[in-house]
Image (cartoon, rainbow, N blue to C red):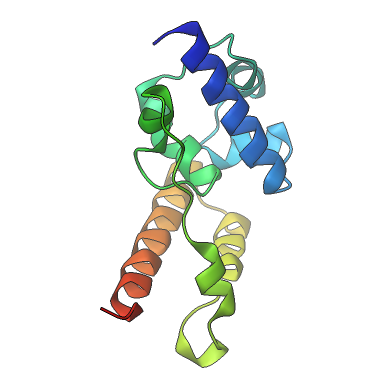
Length: 134
């Protein structure tokens, strides 16, 4: 990984975190307990992301799996399509954001929360894909 790609990843992570209104501490917590200093180092491009943290970071930022690798390869990250979930009538599905917030409020280990949220987002993506006109 080049320093330029690491800096680009850091910039993408910071931008997305700010779009979501997350503090560094909250984002690091949602990523499965990454240390705040580690998260800051990733955002500034001074710390390399370890592959074992990719899934947690992607879920904390509501990016699709593999987004970090895409950025490191020179592409853009792939956010989950949440606009469709928000525009659905209430009787056509769950409120994804509300369910994610409820999971974060549970007294569960961070890794369990991340896994649950990932499953919700994956299911949401499947439902949205099935509802799109062919």
